[in-house]
Image 1 (cartoon, rainbow, N blue to C red):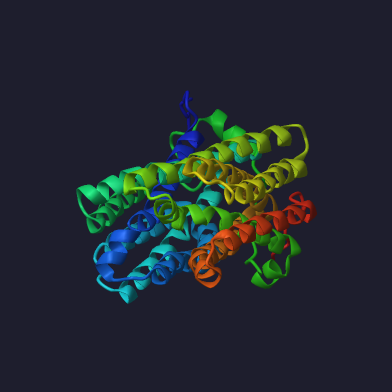
Image 2 (cartoon, rainbow, N blue to C red):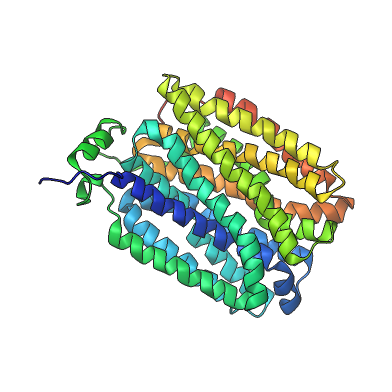
Length: 421
């Protein structure tokens, strides 16, 4: 079949679609943080109860990472992303219908279960469509979409809640997610050769620079997966990264609002700054991963950006504690999030390296551990304040976890694929 050459390669259009989805993922996720005060007021919830509401999402999200990655490997990103985006969008909308703490916990847990399939399925799409030399930047672009989405969401959602209500805000975002799912199913194909718009030239580029797929694929052994030292190292360092970042999606907005006496819109704008810097961290790291890889230093292309990122995260977190004004605190929290997000592109690139045809399962398992970190972040902040009377121990804990991640990266070998069958 004669395929027409396009100026803008089809694989980049696919990346644009996953970039938009990443924006929707974080847009939906951060809404509950911005709506904390009206939700807590309407439902009569304490800060500790809100901590459970924020963390139960992360628990559902974490527990279903590995299963959703396995499903993406088995059934493809087309079907799985369509299903999970539709699922979590329904539960986003249903959040606006709850009237008590138990119902809110139930809906937010299932919202997390749905969102669990997002990034492992994207990873599977990247494995099939994107050459190895382009994956660092592509992962950076995808994760920056989430940060940009969350940054935009903070002031816009604050305005939307004031303009309509917190309940209607959840319904509106749920409808947007369903629309994305329908467009994805209509346009995307799991294999580039099955997409009518892919030119022969682009197909040759993709096939020549993606890792060979095992034509005689055997079922994955989960026993071997969880006995792998490399898998545990990737899980441990990602736990540390998410512990830092998830603070921005849960407690940063109410923390700044309460500590510095800000109104909702002011708190929204200040809280968005670290997320913008997170997007920049993703771009810088993705670029650095690809530049080093193209120089023939595969392992270093994953290790160096991650080590730099964790170092910056620790420095930013510790310094932010001693800032008396909101601007200074936000500047250093932004540095910390810039660093934490520098770790994402090398982490997901390394999962594709070691996971190969099981990349969805491997990346999902890493993300499971990372979101257990998110689960503990949402609970640790209010409970540590209640126990110690200060937020300082929480920030020292976050910095310590970032420092512990550095030796993990020194040990892991991205060039050694896991033997999982």
